[in-house]
Image (cartoon, rainbow, N blue to C red):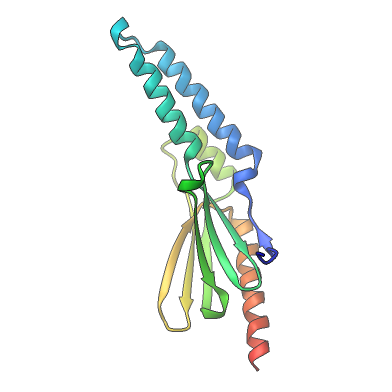
Length: 164
């Protein structure tokens, strides 16, 4: 049985994720509808639409989850075979920090202006007790990232109190 999450971002299930994807598919359908091809090549329109739709729907969505043992980076896809889960044992973490510009307003700008990438992702820097480190780039809103990092630090503090 999995431990109950102390905090979890669940962007994959949020309506905005799916509104954006459906909007992109509608735009794709309109582009393909006006795409002129000779009659013997019309099947290319259908194949293109199906493949690009599957790519849009199958795109992974970042989420973070913290329980009393792990920080988990979830990359969730509608197709389970493409989903990925990376676990970081909190007891091995010496320090963690993060930052970035990713917010709802920036995400709307990115959606409406494909060339706008200022707040594409937030970064997390993890330094482990063996002095190794890793960096994560996650599409998590800045305010949610802050809450996740605070929760990780609280769990770290509780674990350190248990050793003293």
